[in-house]
Image (tube, rainbow, N blue to C red):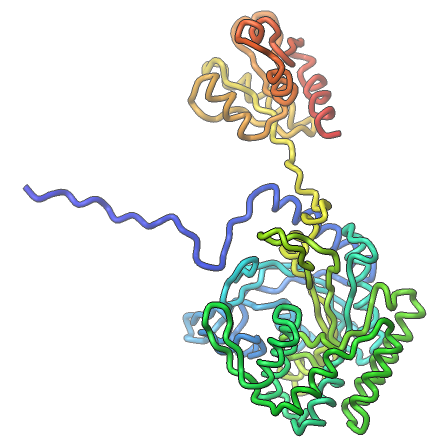
Length: 497
């Protein structure tokens, strides 16, 4: 007789670069998002939601990891054999939306959006292929006043979330200034798609992670990382590398001092001088509003990795230190960024539509708040659990749970089939503040037992033996069934404070 084959079962495993997010973290994220939303609304931005998928050509090829499969995005073909891709940010879909609806939109158009984005990039510690962003964008004005306001919005968002002044900085640069420096070493700034220019931009964008030596290698022959993977460099000569690094490291203590240093480095370059003038105007606006230099600072090392930026660029950096896995102090770094992108809508219409925006990386910012102890990730009280002592009385227990819900209390009737001991274990795992117990004796007397699990756990630590436990019945009270809701409210309120 042939041996019966066992059915082949799929392994329970996550795809690389993805993660599950559980209740406490989700609640903390939702709380944080509400705070960000309130701040964006206060500036007059309106909400907009775009779909997760866009046609691949609409998204464009702007990601820094263009050497990876599918050029950094996850793609598939629809029934018409057209390529679609999961959005890699919320800005490219905005450009498509504006191009489709330009004539009916107010100009400038101010929108905010939050949602999941996906990138087919090499995952690593804290670097996932799926994450959430929260964006604010102003479309339809070329005034750098809009860029300055976005920086102010970013600073106000940090503070609304509990990150204090001195613990963050919004750092600002201008792509035109860097193009002026590149022009000085023989690289045409008009060639926006030039491979060498993009390689230089991406090298400088890694300064925080690799330091000056690593960036210099990427500007020159290339660099091998700790895993042995080699990244080809831009192939610049030593004198050209020195000029780029001089610009990147030109930041000073004050915006005025940094602007003076930048002016000298781009002198004679039309595009570089234009970028310098824009930074100077932004500095004046930020000074007048009380945001420079402590909250918003000009920093030539900021370039941003995406290819579509055309002018001012900015990053929100956290300046406090945390300890890494080895106990060494490290700075937390960037939790968001953005910049001006004046050519994205023109890809669809041929008409120049200037725009600027800022994006918060939700997971990273939430991790930062956790490091500061300000994330609000303390466990939420679980639901009150009504135990099922007699399955013939299920309607009675269900009514108790509903009475609690109608009073605004999280509650559930136990839906399993196990006995009391297992039900109590279930309530503990759910984080229930208390359980409601009604057996036949309590029912005959018109009463319920309410056991405070939190106080009971505390009391149990000081009880020596089982006899004492039975005699003391810690944190357990009998009340009339009519007083159930009022008594549970007291217990819940006690543990929420």
